[in-house]
Image: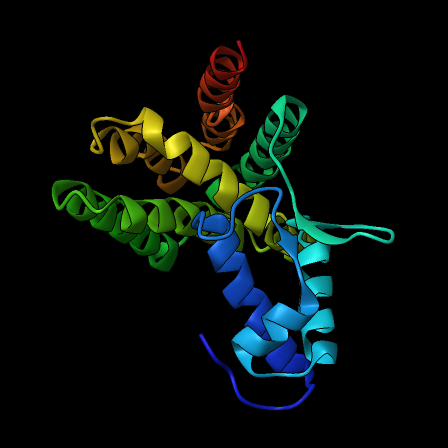
Length: 221
């Protein structure tokens, strides 16, 4: 991908999002060193623009800067899995509780349409689309909650959440399990049952986190 232009906040953001997608999709592997000169040539921009894009990724927690060594894509270790899962569940559970209290007809249609699209993606065997819809579902729920600061925090966790979803995607041999998993949560939110929506969300990623940690342990043996 090549992007023309000079150093500009919108261009930095655009390149940052392109790099985020490459990291989340696994094109750039965990632990990879990101070299400014190489990236500047890849995107046909200045190193200053790349530096700004890398700060965008640092803010999202997808890369870390190591003094005298440079920027590296994060690696996902067992503590990271638990922390991402716990934080994600907490944010999504609060969003689900608030959304159930504020849901209107437009919100009900949004959520049911996403689950319908999930079923279509599952039927078509489209894993990547299904993963995108999974994240879109929870982002929509938080949007419906109307809590602006909650949305801002959730957006900062977006890259790490997407990485988590990609890593746990392999545990779903039957893709239809993913929309099925979301149906009780949709029913609780659209029905205005805030307590049930909260309880379903707070446990939403637990099983995936445990399975991912178990698989990491088996690989390390």
